[in-house]
Image (tube, rainbow, N blue to C red; front, side, top):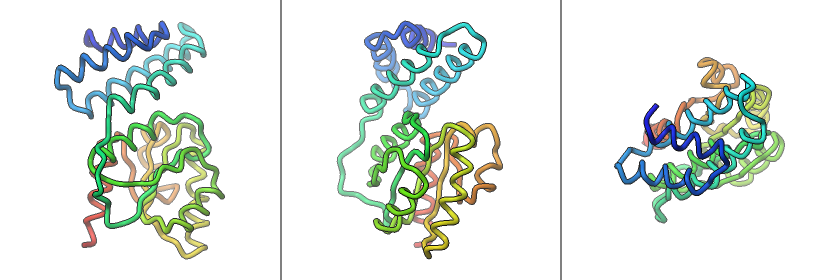
Length: 210
């Protein structure tokens, strides 16, 4: 673990937002690429989650670590205001979960890449289906934290298909990192392990049929 990673982890456990932010700013000044910063944040939260499982930290520390990271992400991955849009309408959502960090990182990275998209926030199955149909979304990114939520993506695909809509569905989140075939099982078109993956996948889908 690097000095920056250790300082960042200790700041989160101490619920010290200022030091956590200073650690990430230090990393940015060292010209660490965004995908490495993303890994630093996610891996640190994974370690803190493991500490909770081991009984060495409290649930409140896990919760506050996630909240601090959510607040910092938009500053660490500032997106560029641009009129550039993908040729297909795109949206991103967290399905039946309240952990927004992964979605925020992906959203910011896509915006940084100059890709416009709608942010649906936290949604249930019926709501996301309705909004995708209403907005005529052609590329849908879905983030989940828990396995039961991930399995409901299959319901989203089924309902959309019944309505005559076949958007490309890109999924990501912990369940898909633990089971690298789960995305196939739920009927997704692609799976990204990182926000950087999401940008590559969207660009590939968006330009693949031109």
